[in-house]
Length: 401
Image (cartoon, rainbow, N blue to C red):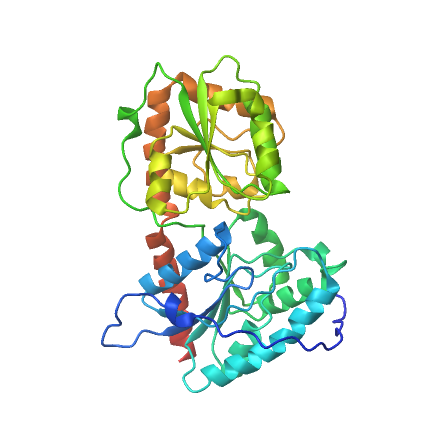
């Protein structure tokens, strides 16, 4: 049962800084007929945030997909509500700051209201505190993508935010889920008549990939790749699991390239010290062309995926026709076309066996990479997402006008 709403004490936060919306508008010129304008918000991490991450990339991709679908999306606000610690004082401050941001948004948007409000990623650590109120005041539809709900979070240190997230989701005309693990709780939590649809994770697949079969040297070491930030928590747990699995591969000739950086870099490097020159650290690579080249120069992406909500790295790798190996977890399972299956979590020996199997038939591994690219084109591409958004949101806009 949803607990009664607790009203936090009023605090006086600084006025939210207006977002750089103009810089994030799609660059393509508008046709003669005006496209329906869509107000976009990403409360967990806005697309103009300076720190790269999968969440920021998905927010940016969603803006592109909305434009490709025939809309005119704009960043309505960069207001961020993320609370990673369950800090009630921070939640109080953010809920009060939201009141100020709502007033600013209404003042800005009322003269020329958008056709719809679209929020990417609303959940108990980062609820949408402004979108539902603004949409209701403007009389426009409200939609959410990558939504999730956890009933147990309605108690405890995140209970206020969990309740606000649930309130936002129940006010939406359309809610998109991304991974199967989120669907059952959402279906139970939403009101009768609300639309619940899947929007699979997606990426811009880019150009046709190099045929890796022509590059493979069957007599040389298998070229493994990891692309991940180096930070404490789930990322470090994945690095630790990978190092443990590689320790079981004494009978396989392999080389591992690691792309990534972060505050846990020293600990990560120590995990791989025993492998010597078989592991090469390249640091963080943000240039998309260099990153794509690294994917195409490898034969297997190896990343356990502990705590990955989706795992953009798997999509980027498969776009480059690179097969992926991950543990059998909800995030990777939703996007990876596996070569021989996904090993169970915490089973380092099974993870090592999967690498061993891939190394036995490099040509088959390369062919599988091309199949993974085809799978991505069909189910996880920018174009497939745009088609779904265009149909669903177009119907909402039409019905509301």
